[in-house]
Structures are given as C-alpha cells and as structure tokens.
Image: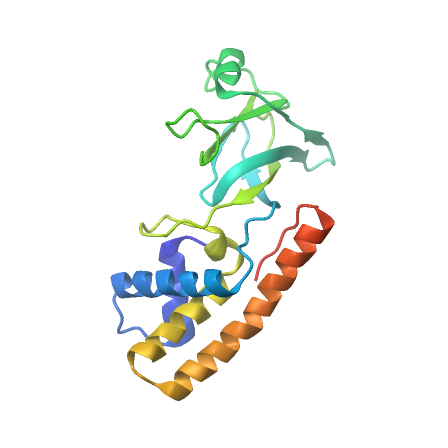
Length: 214
C-alpha cells in the first residue's frame, strides 16, 4: 500500500479527517518506529506476485530491498525459474528490449541504484519481453525505509498496513494526553504485533519464503 493510500486508510479507520496529510505522514513514521522497537523486523525473505503485460519486460518494486529469485508463471500452468544476470551482462543480451521479439523470459536483472550494487535497486527487468500476460513471483527481502512521498511504500505498508495504522493512532492519543485512549490503542497494537512476530518466527524457522498480508 502506497503512502497516499495509507493516509486515506488512516483517516477512514480512525476518523481523524481533521489531520493534514503531513501530520499523518509524521504519525505513520512514529508508528513505524514503535513497531520496529517491539517487533521482529520484517526483513525475512518473502514473495509477492506482480502482473506482467503482453510485451512487458520491466516492473518497479517499491518495497524490496533485495531480490533473490524470480519465477515466470503463465495462465496455462507454465512456471519457469528465471536466471539472474548481472546488469552489464543483461543489457548486452537484451540491448533493445522495447524492440526485441517477445517470447518466454529466461533471465532477470535489477537496474543498479547508482552505486553499482543490486542492493536497494527497485526496477526489475526480464528478457526477452513476455509474449503473453503473465505473473512474476518475486522473492526477496523487504525494505523498511521511511515513507515521505505519495508513491512510497515499505514492508510495513505492504504487509502490515493495519498494524502501522494502529501504531500511528496510538500517537494521536498521546498528543491529546488521553491515557485511556493510549492504553486501548497499545492493547490493539500488541495484538497485531504478536501476529507479526509469529509470522517472522515461522518464516525464520522454515527458511522458506512466505507471503504474508495483515
């Protein structure tokens, strides 16, 4: 869930329509800090499905900090594990993706983030372009960066939006010095944190990627 949608969710869930978007953005950051101080950081390997259009070859991955595996899946049941290529090698193989003949993608790469490292890159490329509408099952580690722009998204917003809104709402009560409200909000936060910690424990114990949405 992108920041703009998360702000709307916050207003709808809490009824605090009087707060400005910038105020809510700050509250969400405070809520994220609260969650990270009390929960196992959600950085274990997970996966998410991303749609790929006909002739498609690239997708932005806003909440990944590192991609580890990409599977290509079609509606007729085909599933292929794509081969990772370093960016320099990938662009040699697929120098003009916009005009390359479509087919079944066999390789993937991440466009460097400017430092020469694939860590932190957010744009996934596959080649050749897909000849049909398909799904990319992307496995990787999720980032926890602070959200400041409308289109920003991190692991908390993507996987634990309800927890993030509850934690942010706690600080609304704190600002109003509403002791009972703070206690009620914190009790709700503790409930979802148990679910977050349980999900992280299971992912860590199994060593398998897991798709989790709260």
